[in-house]
Length: 137
Image 1 (cartoon, rainbow, N blue to C red):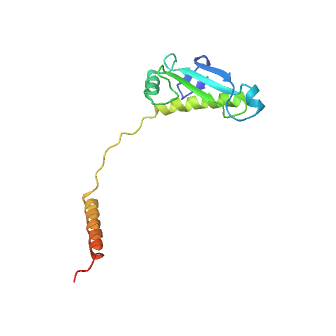
Image 2: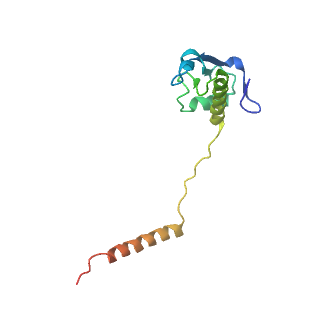
Image 3: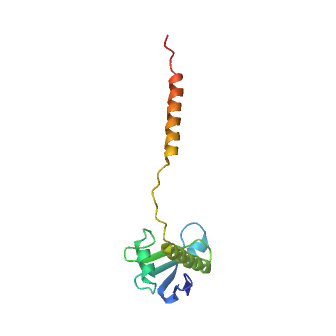
């Protein structure tokens, strides 16, 4: 059972975990042992609330396929157990991030005083530049 929040959890039969061989350096251990974990989670077939499903499907994430399947490959650790925990934790974080509602941005304008200060500094800078010019006799 993967707990997402106080009232939302995913049962183990909805998450498909398979052991595969890890890539990269590591010598014989990598070549012989299937220590990497390939996690697949179908959003449409899950028992998540509709709010979670809609937010997940709207996300632009390379781990979410067009069919609505989350695919996570965990191969950071040497042992299968640690990679399984890592994959499940990454799935939990992905689902939790989808529920965070960002604050709407309100465009702001600089105050009249700030605009005046900016223009005054520009004219002062221009005056300094003209004084540096060639002296006409």
